[in-house]
Image 1: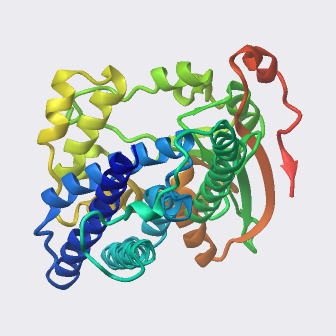
Image 2 (image 1 turned 180 degrees about the vertical axis):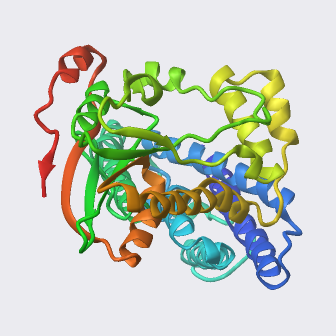
Length: 399
């Protein structure tokens, strides 16, 4: 038993070091020359390292013979790397390769530190983890119960709390405070901007699916003399092969679709979006693929199309330009053209558009006068859906 554990732990440490070394070389070359020469090998070795580390982590619950001071941190390194790395990649997308290289350096250093501690020096003889480092006891109920409780009441809550605050921070960062994640659900901030001549612009952050009463309540706040600049791309040339539909998502979450429940009865509605023929071919291809998967689900055909899909080097920039910047610019032009003929402009657009629009209208002389908070999605159990849908107490809080 101890011989088997020594081989398994040595394999685990060896794969960890191999993954670190391959990743470091691959990231170093990519950082200098922009190409990943070892990507396939890296993925294979990395997957094997994760699987073996997972097996070792499970075995630590069954036997106290495995030295936890070494292998708990090693097994949890991959989880920690994902929890820390993903937010860093999102916040520093322009430095993704540098961040990946730093993670590879940290992994390599950590792996060699464990090897040094396990062997009392950097030795590369087999097994990497000597028998003397293993405990003698094969199984212990105390170890099993203690390890299980530590994961259930320690690790799991810590990860969930971290994910909540991390997600809340990212949402606040990328929406510039227009959307907020709370323990009870998502809220949006409706902001009213006023210019010295009395003209007002209200930004209503929208979601494709939300509580039905959210759509109804915000519609009732529109002034009767307002001009409503509506979001919604057109497709005059039928470039989108499938109709955009959020019904599956709405039904799964117990929510309502925007296009069904958001029907303003006050004010004049004016379409203010662009046609999809202004999108690049790359963006159209992605939209067709995403809509196909979203509306029809995953099957052999969609999986094959997904595997065959490839992106251009500047794909992310093209996507942001098409889906956000072009549409924001067109909307701002519509705002400027309609301002002379109305006192109140309502902009019920997606929350992702709000930071850019708010920034530009403030440059045009508008200042923030009022903010109201609305609950857009509530977290609840399936049995509480109908009861929670009637609760409107959290709507329209002035700030």
